[in-house]
Amino acid sequence: MEDTAFITGWRRLPNELKDHVFDMLSLSDVISFADVSLPFRHFALKRMRLRLTQLTERYDLPLYTLLLVLDRTNSVIGGSLALELVHPTGLIPNNMDLYCPQQEADDLCGFLLSKGYEPVPDTLVFPLIVDDVPGRNCIQAVRTLYNPVKQSTIHVILSTSSSALPPIFSAHSTFLMNFVSANGIYSCYPSLTERDIGVRNVTDKLVDIQPRRVEDQDKYIRRGFSYVDGCPPLSMSSPHIVAETCLHLTRTLTDGITAVLPFDMNRSSCSYWPKSEWRMGCELKLTGGEVVRAETLIEVYCDSTDNWMHGNNLGRVSLAERAILRTVPSMQW
Image 1: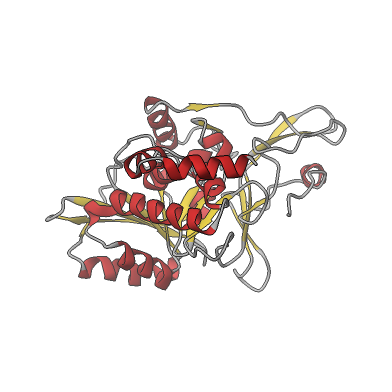
Image 2: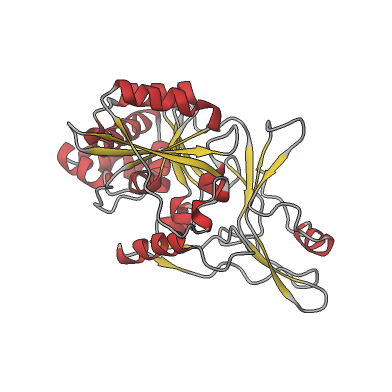
């Protein structure tokens, strides 16, 4: 009955008001809207495609062409542009971040060069810090390209994996764990993001401060976002509530938390290949009462002949820590 009333009321609205209201919706609300009926899904996809077109217009890449190159190189759009797409605030991102598998970097950069972009040399600032080391936080390298005609900048972030996603799951906070693939739009922590709330991510337990990550976190505070603490340290004895703020939970793109809107109007879900799982940096309480940090780990299912875990200090998880992490229930749906 409520759905019928909503449908009737929506249809009576002027088209201009429909567009205005819809363009303020975050991704979870867009998905709920699209699930009402097929015509509603058609309207939702049309408006979201337009939202993405407006956000990428300055880069002189038509949406069809952009999605095609994302498909050909298995790359994704991330960063502030993806955040603005899933949670509109009126912000106009200064650049576009494209994440790609390391083996696809030359093809992606070659395509951008053919569209008038020029490589910008990286300027190293000495002394070097941990952020400058290739492979840290699952980033092999960052290539910057600039279009002098459109005065637009694109960053191509090379993953250390055959998946483009590990650098996103290694980001400084949940604010950056949104992306656009050729097949759909994803928000990994939707209820937090849509309330302007994020959780910091610990990716290196041996380095207390990573300067650029601190600067990036502060940038989002200046934009009106805020950070909250994740769940308390996990131990073998204390109960643990599984929720979106649980840092110990192993997550996937097809679990019950990630918000996904496929571009195909005949589908209600989609995924990204190769399959990946991630667990954010968290704290563990050992049997003796000591609290230790466990850094972010990402698992990509087609790297190497066995499952390959991506992280900064692999092999440093003790047997006691592993036993605690195994107590966290899975969120497979």
